[in-house]
Image (tube, rainbow over all chains, first blue to last red; front, side, top):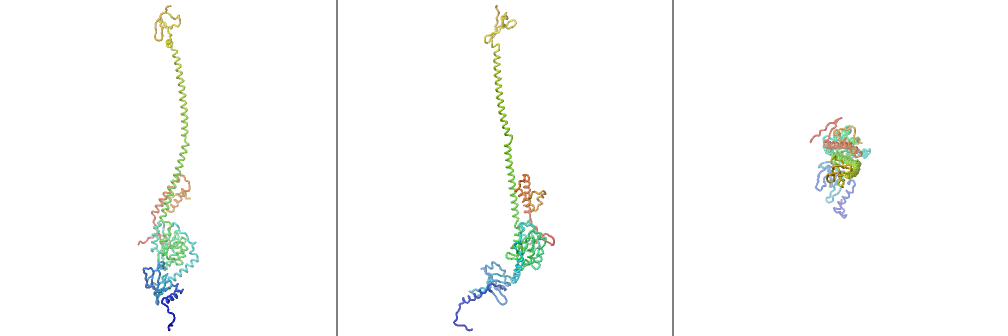
Length: 400
Length: 81
């Protein structure tokens, strides 16, 4: 083909821009899954991931930006067969096209995922995942059922968590294989066990693994057995980012087995200690208040009793008696004085009758010397006579 | 509600749940009712022993792990690492 000499000449940039438009405006290339083997894997400090996808005949440069790499944390290995999702873009400075990748999954997962979505939609339509079906998890379970492998790390994590948080509980372990073809029927069988169903809550758990490892928990039989459980089920399978159909069918989804054990023990030993301490305080407060009430009632009674006591009457009686006794005393005194003055008068009258008193007024008593007879008349007077006056006596003789 | 039952089990024989619910009943009875003092003191003393019993059960609690083996339960021996 002869070049036309006078047509327009394009710059490299212009050509590259046209190629870029051609690729980046093609919808098929802007939302594409590409399968191949990983090579030239490079993870520089920038956080972006660079690799090449290869198959027998071609290779495709790929980059995953830091944000996508951090979000999806792809498990990448040199030589691994993967499926990468993204859009084709042109890097103009180097004239290269590349796949800007935002998602990488192991090869074959796509088919599994399709099956997962199909079953999920079907069970969802049946109402198996309805929020109204979810039952509350008991706050303080007495018996905790565990369905997991007897040898896995999940069981150890769960038991350690339960020991730490609620050693009061009893564990009923229903061991079952959690991966492989035997896992689904075994899981169904233990989930239906009447012994397990006597628990207050059931933990269905498995540690992390690839999506194939976790596949038993997407098995329709297992999912239905979880939904049919009479006892609430907490499902803790894999890691935070893993979702299984059992998660949707369970009454509560836990991100990990440890988290499942935590969700099963909303009330911990510390809470129980606190509760007991609380009761103790209330009990002590109550009885103190009761005793205080009784005490104040008692002292009120005592006060009333004191007021109503006969003591006051006794006091007033004593006062009355005192008054009486004062009156008696004064009456007696008066009467004694009266008597004393009467005696006085009598004694005065008596002393007036005393003959000696008369002598002192000049009278004399004359007695005959011979017979001592008082001379009261003239005829009485004869012989020698004694004359008695106030201060002595002398003798006289009748002359005529 | 949980008026002091006529047939009271000794405190030591009660499970944690039994002891707790009786304790709850006693506290409520003391809060709600005007009990004669000697009855209140008896309730209080029973409550105190229930508190002590619950505390002791919590202190000594050890997770009991049993494994389903066919139709029955057997002690589960954890393999030590």
